[in-house]
Image 1 (cartoon, rainbow, N blue to C red):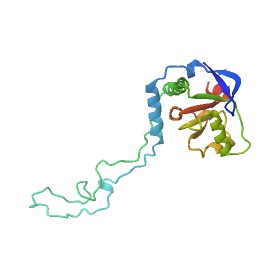
Image 2: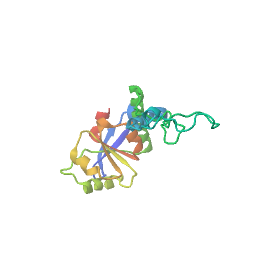
Image 3: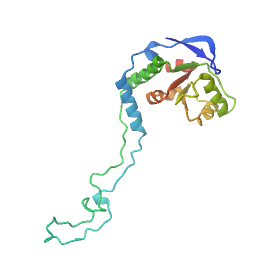
Image 4: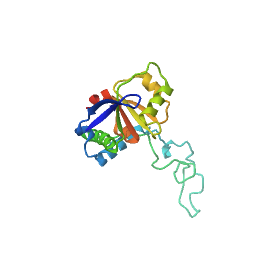
Length: 205
């Protein structure tokens, strides 16, 4: 499929770029995208939750009531999970929620997400541009001219790390700046609009 290349003013440059169907024109695989998003979210979890169990609670093991004649079971420790203030039975422990996913599945998920944006008409190709200094107002103006200023979230994918572009867009709540090396299924699906720099396409391929 061919897509027109726009400049930073949102106007057509008169050129178009060929997007390979193997990446931008496949039938989106919903299950692969689900697994990739699930893995991404799982990897973001800190997993530092912790509750003290019976052996970790600092409470007395002295008999706190008569062992017989009460009509109830014997009890000899305030550490017991059945006592208020005692340790928790099978409480949460620190753990890593991340899990492995086959490389082919992750690649299929990325291709599916990119193809989905292309099918929805939410993909724009912009001619490479640079900024002399970090200027949020100027970057916001570029978004407005591209017609994505009112979008819930726009993902800009740059070919290389650029401090001026990153610093210009990071304070905008509806903009996400990302290097092409860091592109992932979650970020693509989260964005309502996807803006790729022209030279980013060849790096994705």
